[in-house]
Length: 221
Image 1: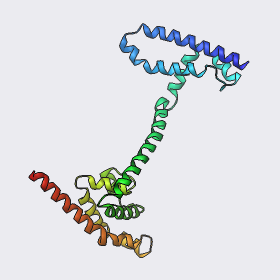
Image 2: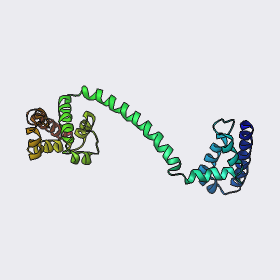
Image 3: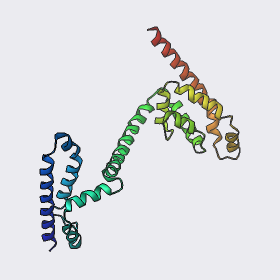
Image 4: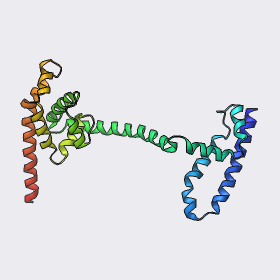
């Protein structure tokens, strides 16, 4: 019974699709192109019902009752929230997540071999600790980063004046009253804040000086 209904519905949809295509063929080329999305989606609906076992007899019957089932399915799709954009965005989101994860892993390996790896690592650990208390939103906004992991810090240091920006921020934030208070109640690790003065600022200063020397060499050339 269901198999018979599926065949009936498929044949009905195919007939409606062929009639639709004949009408499209009469249109100017520009209109044919503008209807390419509609053509593709309608073709998908026809193919969906070829030998399928995904629908029960009642679902098949109500679709067979429609004057033009293909038009009904297409209009329902267009009216659905998000439409194909939703599907495309969901698929792209998963793809990009995997690509970004792979990119960051490759970059992390590269950073570990970098001469300034210790600076990048120490700064990342300190910034992430500060970010837990929302001290770093200006950095995130300024450089369009999210996590302040070693990859983010590395990317910031490659930006023009990125090193100077981080130096000024680190030099200022360690004196903030709120930072001092969080350390005094053992909420913020004192070692990470001490690292700013003892490790991060000296290394950042050296990094900035080296950048300036490299700029001067390029200018002289």
